[in-house]
Every structure is written in C-alpha cells, then in structure tokens.
Image 1 (tube, rainbow, N blue to C red):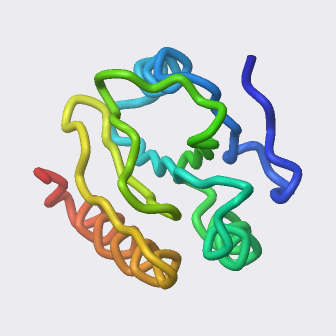
Image 2 (cartoon, rainbow, N blue to C red):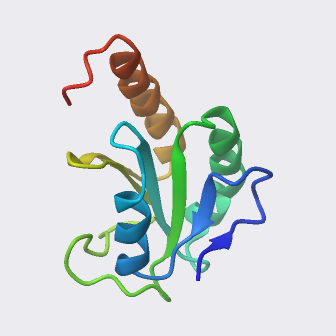
Image 3 (cartoon, rainbow, N blue to C red):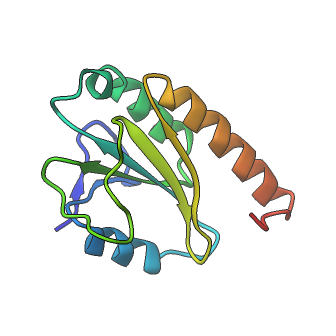
Length: 129
C-alpha cells in the first residue's frame, strides 16, 4: 500500500514500504522519468533536520517522482540495499538504474544540484546518462 507523504501537497511524494513496491512504481513509469528515493529514519537527527528542506525540494521538482523509505520499517533485500548513512537519496531512471547517490547533512543541496543537472541534460536531448 502506497501512502502519500503528509509533508507534501502534491502527489509526487510517496512513502514506500518495500523493494517490490518501489520496483513496481518505477516499472510503471515513463522511461524518461527521474525517481528520487530518500532513505531515512525517525531516529536520525540529520534526517529530521532536513525534512522540511526535502519537502520544499519535492515542490520545486514536480516532474520528478519522490519516494521515502523508512530504513527501520522497510523491506529491502537485493535491488536496493540499505544505505550505510542516513539521510541518503538515490536518483534512479528506468532502464538506466541508479544514476547518483547523495548522503549526509547537506544531501538536499547536493540532490538539488544533481537534479538540476540531470534535467538540463534531459531537456537538451543529451539524456544518455
């Protein structure tokens, strides 16, 4: 069951509980869609500190699909292993797999720069990443 995140006012941010759910969502997407998977924990102080910045980022990129995974509750086994650090975000594109991983206290700023760069490449038809 997919749950829309309450921190976001649009529908491009979902809470995902398992690897199967995430894979299903990505497989149903368009090939050009970018997906951001944020791994976090309610017990992680940096995760909580970046929560509102991440919610703003979701609003800035309405064409990107955002997913949040609680590393304590989620079931992830093979395709996407649990991250070593939280918060961590992974940018994925269907048929290309994992494009970029960012983590740490400033991950929202790093993520924003990566998304801007990838969307610019995509817009300029250089999306062979």
